[in-house]
Image 1 (cartoon, helix red, strand yellow):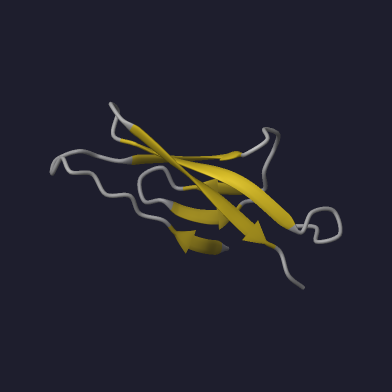
Image 2 (spheres, rainbow, N blue to C red):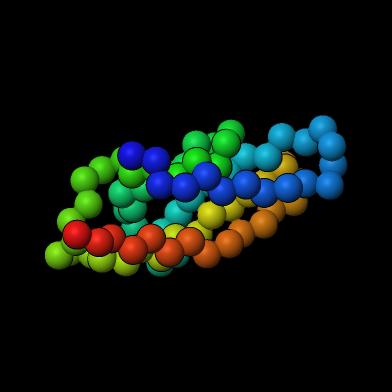
Length: 77
């Protein structure tokens, strides 16, 4: 299931941005990001009773420079 597409912009016209997604506090996360598009999706079943909020870090990189942002995903039933 696709959750959101996140886009970064680079001032260099011909750079290819790559995306990565990690748990803000480490550990395994049930989400992933398409490295070429920034589309965040669910890769494993979610258990609301176990965890109803996920704090993630999204990294965008052009190979020379990196930018990160916090991503919060709230699970609702």
